Image 1 (tube, rainbow, N blue to C red):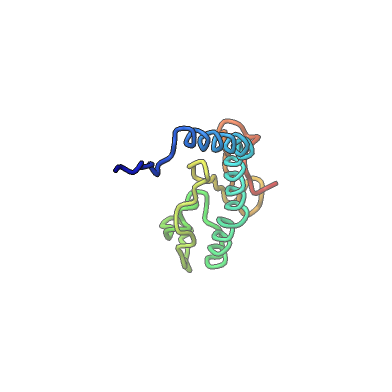
Image 2 (cartoon, rainbow, N blue to C red):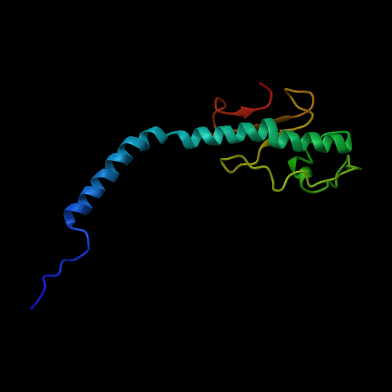
Length: 139
């Protein structure tokens, strides 16, 4: 007397139905998310330029009386500069890691600035060759 055993697995039809449903959901969601990665990177760069790196530079300036020079660069926020003017009251590091934009490039830093009297801080954005997507602190 054999009892009929029924497998507890999924049938091919059930699996195909789940795949179709997941595909339909992905087709509805993915277009909405397209381009969001670039928008997020732009917001991160703006946040760094307007707040994160800017705050570190202001703390450096409060401690030392001046901003790091162009030659010292943003590295002076991590390690005490050994070039003139040597910061006398350096109380860093002011940042945990070297400021890198979301596209993997260092932020451009000039002090005194060409556009502002204190410093210029910018990122070339996604397209390094074009200036129209640059993110800057002087506009």
